[in-house]
Image 1: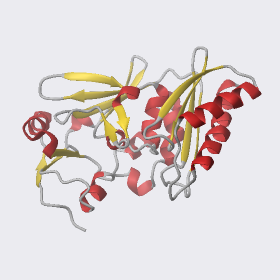
Image 2 (image 1 turned 60 degrees about the horizontal axis):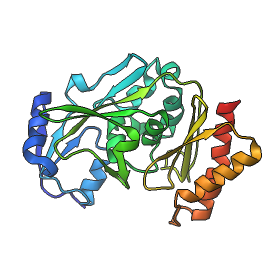
Image 3 (image 1 turned 90 degrees about the horizontal axis):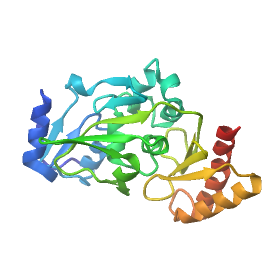
Image 4 (image 1 turned 60 degrees about the vertical axis):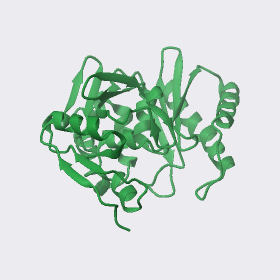
Length: 270
């Protein structure tokens, strides 16, 4: 199939982007890497009247490490973040998760913020942002605001971004005490059947699970012995509301939450 007709705007200034969103609202879509949006356009699941291209704006293509956060602009490609020399030291969890995000070809085009905007519940970058307690930077023509990751994702490919807002950047906390990541997919690079990310917290560990509920879900766990941890993970697995689909049964997903959830938590708590 081919996309429905739309106007294309190659933005030369950020003000041009914000003005376009203000005037078009829900009829406008931002395109950066296009790895998620283009298939939706081709299948006519998305039919914007105007497509606004932001990839020629240098102010959106920055990675900045400052005051305990790494801020990644809307124009930063996944491959650029993966190649950033400070990634392993600043964001070890993201360094673990990024190689599982698509393939070399898609990472060379797709952007970090584009994955956050698409909000696929099986995607690795939304999971990492939630696990780390990161923030999404939103901006329209009148104001800026920051939204915690656990308040940004609202459901299956749904977010709390307003129609006139641009995801300007995302921020990942970089003061990580310890972290671990693991996922199970049909093939490397496919969306995860289940993915788990664990981050050490003050009193225990924060576990984030993707691929089961309609969005990544996080839960704080205290330090528990083996049997208590198994019981807690079993209860958590059922609370996620897994469903059968063409990729896996609900029971298999719950089993994976219990198995790889315990694995990543043990690695963090060692």
